[in-house]
Length: 252
Image (cartoon, rainbow, N blue to C red; front, side, top):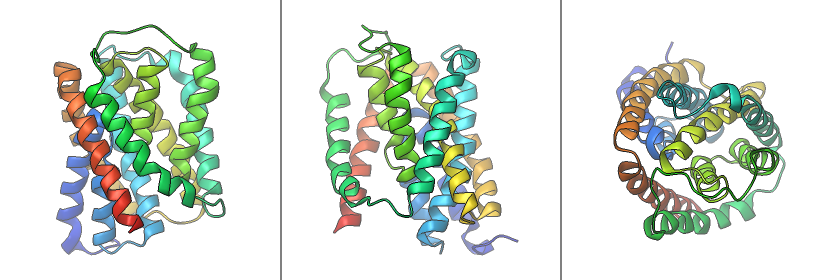
């Protein structure tokens, strides 16, 4: 039985498809699915847990598509993915009692800065650049930090992965997007574990939305691989700006 009523099912399925498409290219799919779940009648904790269920399908599909296209070597990313999984599970477990108000107030400012970076930083394309942090150090610092945040709060985690890969790992925009989707997938599973233990997800709703997420993610990742930075950069700017606006609205 569909938990939120059959009448809202078309809204949620359409939202999941669009979110999968946008998220595969630039992240920020939660901007679409979380409000849709809340409008459909889910409680905030149910919406967060269910969003992890359906988001797992989208990020997993996008990660597999990029891997098949040769943009990420899954075997070399096992350790970072496991780190993101564990960190996100810990973050989700801590979400019920850690004070998150400071993060909520700081996030809009951070997201605006990310949008400005991708909008005005010259020379951002699909070519790799100078590596400022070794893969080992990146995996020990940035991956658990962002993965833990993804489990604790979630909004903007994909953008944080992106900017870390571009500025510190020296990846081109398309390669950064491909690796972001893999770590997003791992941290989605970790965060889902934390919410599942609390009994929060609406499983039927999440699984149905997940199927549409997969379709949107396949289309979005195909477009990203074909056009690259020319489509990824503008969508990153738009999604980061919209996420900042959404977070500010929630604080008012």
